[in-house]
Amino acid sequence: MMMANTYLQVLCLFICSLAIINTVSSTKENVTPYLDEAYHVSKTIVKNAVSKGAVCLDGSPPAYHFEPGFGDGAQTWLVQLSGGEWCRTVEACLERSKSEFGSSNLMNSWWFTGMFSKNQSGNPEFYNWNKVFIRYCDGGGFTGDVEYVDPATKLHFRGARIFKAVMDELLEKGLKTAKSALLSGSSAGGFPAMLYCDYFRTLLPNTPRVKCMNDAGYFINAKEPFRANFTELYTALVTLHGSAKALPKECTSKMSPELCFFPENMQQYVKTPLFIASSAYDKYQINNSIAVGINTCIGSSNCTATTNQTFLEFRSRFLNALPKPTNPKLKGVFIDSFNHHSQVQFWWSPFNITTINNLTLSKAFADWFYDRNYTYVIHEHELPISALGALAEKERKAKLKKNMRHLPKFH
Image (cartoon, rainbow, N blue to C red; front, side):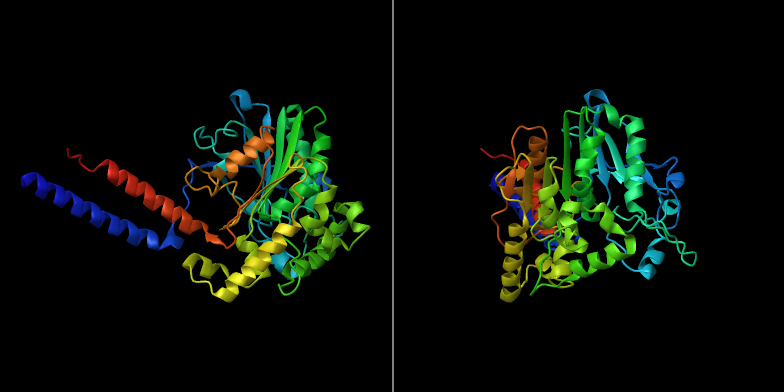
């Protein structure tokens, strides 16, 4: 009898704890991704950049954050182009020049986590690499090259020069002797990672393995009935930043320069192996291409039937824009249906990372990079999934499993 009462008390406590877990996890948009042993890395100012005219919007020299590799990773390099939208008007660029996205004078240290983590268990394939995080301070996606500086604004549009000046310095720092090298970019940094991929390859003629990745920067030309925000943005961007000269002539000879900013129109000219990682429902993209605030219903799980139909149409157009799956060795793809934006930092940790049929992006990409398996994976789940909701559910199950382990065993 006493044994039965004890069991009932324990069972009651367990059920109560489950109720608390469910209450907490129901507020899924408040869940914060786990940062896998994140650490700060101080900035490095690029030497001789000013003399090359390679400067941020405000005329300050560009900067990056560097963490040396070690062990068998001492001759492997990850070079990441950071994102942060674009500025397409003088007024917007002036405002941007007063922030860390337009001036190295205002940049502090940067958090290294995810693919930049030194934690071997959480980041087994890249933990000991040389890691470079190039700060984005030109507002033009590393594509601008305008010699003239208006004395009234003192704005500089020199993103293309910044990229080349940083590469010059990294080559001298040891990049030129790399055994493996990856040029990656997230969000607004994703397109220039594609744009400069072949150039990056030419800088490393003796490096056996050189590849590139576009992380959450595959913005499509959605067209009607979707909004034309990206086309309008790129049109203004090309004009203000003088970006046309940075774009492939093979592309600009066939279409207007702003259309060459869309990866779908430019990807055929990239000859170096390229990996595309994105959500079919990227938070930034659908907010701009479908409707402002559209992500809210995904997080709240209350999208209407009409909205879901719009999502399906957008997904179809997004998938059709991707490179065909005929040669995944040259063009690898990992497209999930989770509503997030950029994965190589905050969504790279084993605890946070999204999966497609139990395959994680970190595993899929590493296999593709090291030529173990050439990945072309598209999530079969057709409607968007809340990434934070999935994380909350994972957290709930982990707590449930932990509580189950602490239940007393009765025989």
